[in-house]
Image (cartoon, rainbow, N blue to C red):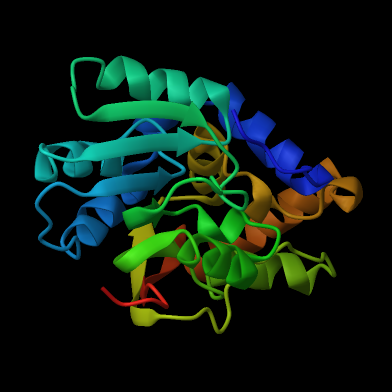
Length: 249
């Protein structure tokens, strides 16, 4: 198990995801779709050494184990409960290894032909620096692929919170290196209550707002404004990126 000195924000994030490992699959419809789209970018490799950062319950893991049957896949997450859930889902896979790992502190004694991460980089303390650190762990000719929340993630909800003078912890993912493409997907949740329930069910509660200033009455105001102006519709802004090893094979 390798964990960097965790910030308070990262420790809270790890604990939230740990508490929701059992409910994650039920609420993570978009995360599953994003993993499928990222999998379409996986390179053709024969027997690669692969590192997955932030496996969750295994949406992307499934693709890696099927695609690289002759390789070795190190499957990691910062939350031990997520690692346990993923291990239970893929216990029979002979090419899988599992570990608890902070993605911003990758193994120093190994090099990987492929590093992948789906919907995790936005949780890094410093996403750009974290990506460069991961890139430094690539073997010559290696590739790093990632998907992450973009800076306009859930912009409708963010705007309603800011209208009430609440500071939000927006995904710090502007100007990340290696941008391949971005997409904006609208989802009709029906109401703010349903949107927030979906977020809470996965452990991704950060878009709710600044906790110490968020009173129940102000939260109700934001929810009512969101329902009135946006009819329960919210937009997911997702960015996809690719980085290559600084040392080419």
